[in-house]
Length: 133
Length: 404
Image (tube, rainbow over all chains, first blue to last red; front, side, top):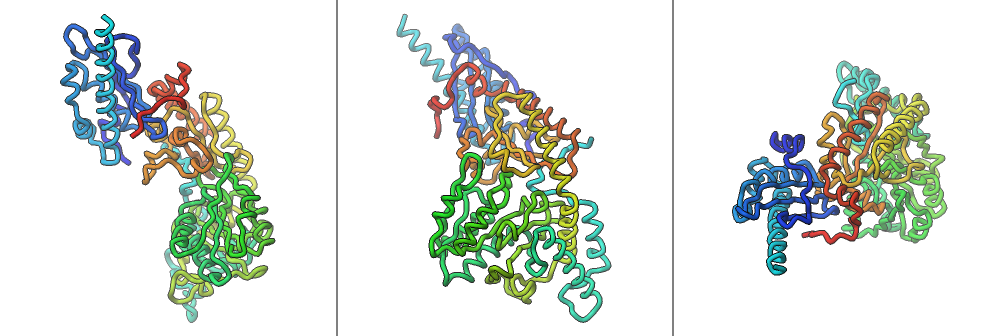
């Protein structure tokens, strides 16, 4: 299978690889997929508590080149957005940006899920914190 | 050293230039139909076919009259299994095969199952070998055929063929062996191995694509087949169709070369394969060989690289041609059924790579491939959340994964 230029670019030069401190209350962590399925994505966001804007994002992905590219792109897309804006990101935007073929659409779905899971985690942490206050 | 490096010789092998030289006259001046009985064009084609028949028979320990030419091993497997099932339908309707067979055997058996045959699918151990006791106890008075491959196309594991042949003979059951990966690489001998039908392919042993053969035993016992192709009654009525003379000449020459060079070539490839394995193992932790190392083709290495998905690994070494058992590289989006049969977890099946060394690989290439594998696996593990978790001591097996 031939990969699109953009998939190759993200695979060869993945953006925002790494991990943020899971214990930081301003960090949300999303982990989606399963090793048995051949894809696991971990996506983390760091939110500025004053502005509610995502100031940093990191990912690590076990999966094919398209999965790596989808999560790399997802970290670029979320940075600088508010949580509500980040929740508007759809997998179809990732599909068209990376020119993913039909068999790789699930990679983009996983990336969208990872964003949602990370935001959800952040919101839960914030709620728990407020409850504790 | 030229790139890309080809190390996928279980998929296909390059044509040996000596084979091409042998074929060339039959692609040009000597174009006759081997079935033309009344002019020199036909005679020289027939002579070439008979010479090739003998070269193939010699390599397999068979007689020339026991070789039936086909289009390849898929056709040979179909002809052997369907041909026996139809011919011996009055004697029985039960066939025994194994879960790790090639699809050309598995799907042929599935079709027969739909037509009313009973099929036993033997499992294999973690080493990839069938259990001989399980085989023996699966045989009933309705069993007509055992179809077990010589060597596996993914993991290179060699089955205990001689013992299978002995059990088959003792119980009066025919033994078909798909020897596509083994002929020319391992010392296959239909007499000593007790094989009654054997599938052979040219393009897995440096011959051309589109030609193969089926060995059909002529005595002790005399095996009969129902033809699967109707027509001019070529190949003693077992396989109609004008013979592919240049292809057959190529198959014959490929066999003759293998017969002369196999001992030396196996030793060389085994040394290269072992070198590849030890270089990779020295450079990386958590790599696992799939299947028995002891009962294995000398040119095969199948390894899982934990925490790194196979397709992404292939993508990182585009100048190296190998293949993966990962779902993402298969048409079905399922990871390798062969590794699954061995009990390899799906997580590790997704990370497997098959290296198939061949006649034209060099030590320099092996060193290059090992270095590329180590480099790319190391890079991808830095990207892998699973590797990070494993290093933190998280037990991945006990994790709750959000599966659909």
